[in-house]
Image (cartoon, one colour):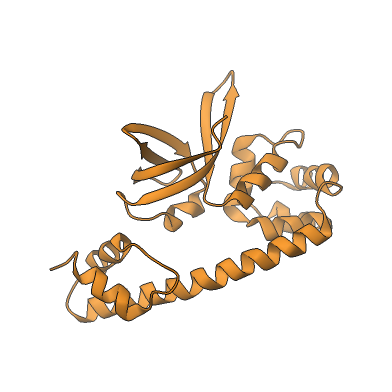
Length: 203
């Protein structure tokens, strides 16, 4: 079993990312929503993976940017009638925290809002998983994810401010976005520092 892949991001399309691991390119099926969360091509990236093997599709790697998403994916595919594609689609439209609380509260309407998930499938997910999702664990993971989201949110705002600053200097938004994506980010970076690092890729 391949638990994760760590290497250089070769390229990413809407639902596929290719990771270069020591000269070998691994094609990974990702959620469409993860495409914007990936770094620029050529950057280091780590993706948690699940290897699915079936008669129809053969061997396919499904990947997620957090271990929490992978764990929820594993849980979803234990539900009768929910395969990897359906589970990936569901996680592409709903984060694990929202899904856990929807299951615990038996909120089938929220789950059914995800693309490709109907009321029947939503009801089956709740029925099969409501005893497998622990309320205290759900709260603990929500708190943990909230802290990570707060850091990411602050960093995202700093990146956007840096992009706007580059645009004001005369660069196009596309050039600015590409330059900011190339910067190796740390949690403590502010807009000024990101701006200075981005300029190295433009001058």
